[in-house]
Length: 256
Ligand SMILES: Nc1ncnc2c1ncn2[C@@H]1O[C@H](COP(=O)(O)OP(=O)(O)O)[C@@H](O)[C@H]1O
Ligand SMILES: [Mg+2]
Image 1 (cartoon, rainbow, N blue to C red):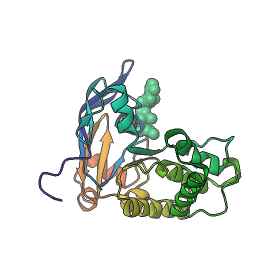
Image 2 (image 1 turned 60 degrees about the horizontal axis):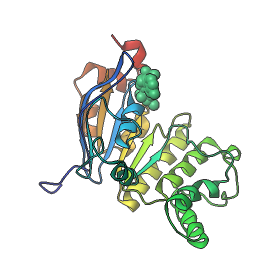
Image 3 (image 1 turned 90 degrees about the vertical axis):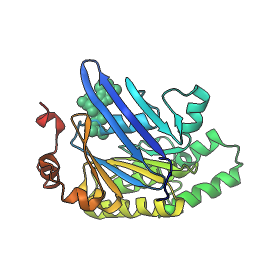
Image 4 (image 1 turned 135 degrees about the horizontal axis):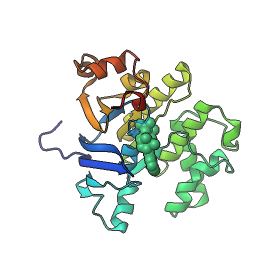
């Protein structure tokens, strides 16, 4: 990495509570351009809440989220909207529109945010489906697809507007090991071919090891470990070690 390279995303002192319940208690994290960062943690640890702050779907109580040098938390609405377009997000359950075909789902952001004509939209939808290795599904409805295929359609929709940051929320939840491996390969393929920065949140270490340049562990609202895969694998932190052994699943259960 060149000296002086600016982080793609800088999170500074991020705090967020819901009512009396503190969820994020001071997060500091820099994500470099082209990096794939994986944030792991138990269920309920605040991973999804964290991810929603990156894209401005939630605003911090305290702290800052800076994308390409621009503070998302202080930005005018028009600037915030422009920043948000740098992101492609794949939500936890795929979040496809059930009443639309696969084609309609992927075309949706193109029709909404670009002035591409029908032919250009169709070509772009095909390109996106090619990238996630799906064929002959354009006319199907989400309910007619397997869970793994729905995730891949969600990926295709997330990349439609050529984002330079991709966010993945639990992309393998509910999938079997074979489909998990397919999703991991696709995430790496998208990173390679689209040269994006990627942030993935998951509690699935099978996925995490396959896609991470660095891993961060979220616990009780703080990042308690941050390292490359080798360093993370050999972390002396007892919670990280327990997590890697599969002993910790639910933050709610271990919270003090
Ligand atoms: N919009 C919200 N309003 C109130 N509480 C919320 C909201 N979103 C998340 N929470 C709470 O914040 C905590 C962390 O949630 P979440 O980020 O979804 O966890 P996970 O790490 O499983 O993704 C949970 O206790 C959840 O109930
Ligand atoms: Mg979540």
